[in-house]
Length: 330
Length: 228
Ligand code: HEM
Ligand code: SF4
Ligand code: SF4
Image: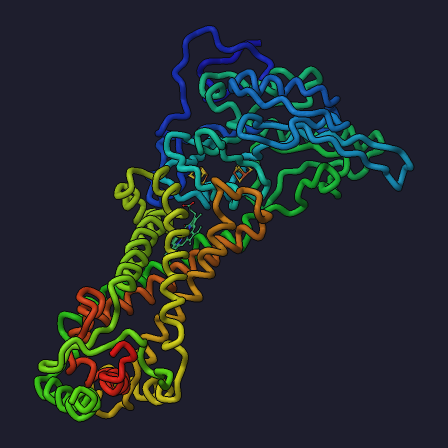
């Protein structure tokens, strides 16, 4: 199967790249939203929304995806110590954009032990908190196919994206002071290739394509899981952030927290909304009014001046108070 | 010698005809200007990140990365510089009964009808408000600022706390900018005030009009200087 170069995005990660040359998309013209750029013009075309589906029930925890990610993105995660578990490195880092998280669950209903393995990383939110929080124009962009990407040359390293993200994903580098996270392989998708992790996954627990197709595929997987006794199986595509372009099939969709703390109802925190919303508009208006008001008042109102009379009175006051000095001197 | 109530020990008459009263020694003035300069740098670099329409201010500091780096360090400088200033000024900024009258007659203050106001010590209630407002806001800003300092304290507080910290930091920043505008405005509107921080002294008339108790105390002390 090869990709049709006339499509605007790959429909699978399994295929080899198109043989015919194709024009890269995901340029400036495909940006629908950019951080700190409220008046961005609407792009001329709408790309097909894409998605990566992670079927947790199929994952065997081999971490091929993690390796493929580091390889494609050319990152070198630091070698750490074995602390008796498979999770490694200990957390997402500026050099590790995706991390297999392993949690052990004693299912009280079945009495069975379950090993729940979740591939953590950026969810590519439809309503991204990172983008909302970022103060640097164009440091975070969202393309019309749904991919949220960090444009590093515009990043100033302030860490506001960390504050804004409901999934605790971005990591600011200690060496170049720029923020890093999964790009959904935007540089591959732009030229018709699926994400490296999806391509590497030996069980096809990670699949990639149009979001519509992925939802259909996920529904099939959920039906299959239900038929095999996982009655709470379901899709995790959280509404609170407008849906995500990386989403999960979970066997326990009623308890997403089981999967190393996947939030049940993620949304951009109201504190972040208040900070980036009213605080800014009202704050700026009040500061502006105070500045303009005091300049106008200064120009047109009468100044508070000291009169010549008051200078004389001061001399008088001093003369009648100070004599002590004269007496001592005589 | 009785403890001064309305003046610092160092405040003295520089001359008697015409009267000039020394208000701040050079050390305090330098301290004030370091504080003022750092506050200005902070508000420019902070506002650059505050709103997209002000991001261009990062150009003053050589770009976004430099602005992000510089701001917290100047914050630390401001904190210590203000702390030294605080130690020198806090006593005479404690509230006194006449402050209440002054505030209740704020209309006369605005109209410049100072003959109707009570005689005041070295500071009026407005100046005291600026002093305590700055003191509290700088504490809030340093506290919340360290919590959102990505470069050195990325894991100091949890992400939910960090969200509150950045909200508090920007609200406190708005507040301190308003206090700052008021402070500068009052210094300019009340003619003759600026020389207190440039030359270190004011005219007798200025002291008579705005801070008569202070003038009385300084004049009364003259000649009884223990150095004589
Ligand atoms: C009077 C002083 C200060 C003013 C006017 C001020 C103002 C601001 C403003 C307006 C912002 C942007 C907030 C936003 O984007 O909503 C900011 C960010 C920030 N401030 Fe301050 N601030 C002051 C003092 C401090 C202090 C004392 C610290 C101490 C460490 C500090 C550390 C930070 C940090 C870390 C940021 C995040 C951006 C960055 O890393 O540069 N600030 N400040
Ligand atoms: S998961 Fe976090 S970093 Fe990724 S798009 Fe959503 S808010 Fe941004
Ligand atoms: S660290 Fe970079 S990407 Fe994150 S909010 Fe700051 S400027 Fe934006």
